[in-house]
Length: 191
Image (tube, rainbow, N blue to C red; front, side, top):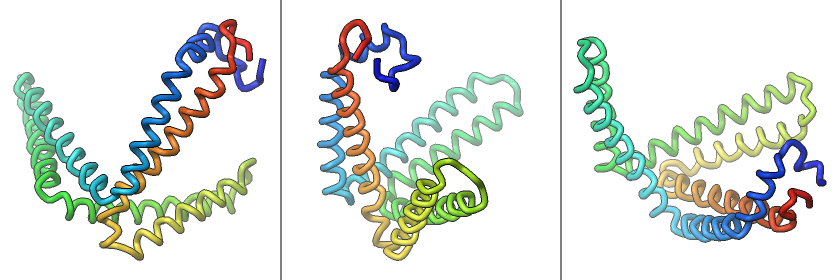
């Protein structure tokens, strides 16, 4: 048996083999979705931001329902305040998706820059077995943050959709690779 399957039960390997075609179809679908999300990055960005807004509105509604079921005043006030906050923020995001996409992109650029600096600092100050990859990761993250920041506010109109599309493509490719490995497995769980 291949060492990469050590610790995986024969039942799980059998299930992996039986669902290989499903994994492959899901991977292909994610790649297609990611491709279109990348090509139409502006639409993907606005769709993602509006989705986030509606998610916050639904969380606000859930908090409001939850607050109506709580009899203690302190808990009631907290949950009611959260319901108002989530609903108001969600509505603001839904009604002004472009402004919020630009703001979220700026926060994303800042977080990439900070994460890249921290990764580089950690790589250069600690002994880790994957130091080269950590330096590469930190440098790429820092560079990505700087590039997004340099293009801001215009980057706010396409970055989120582009990143979601790229993530979908890589996730789809991962599922396809899992399917190709799973198809090689026998029902006994052996390769």
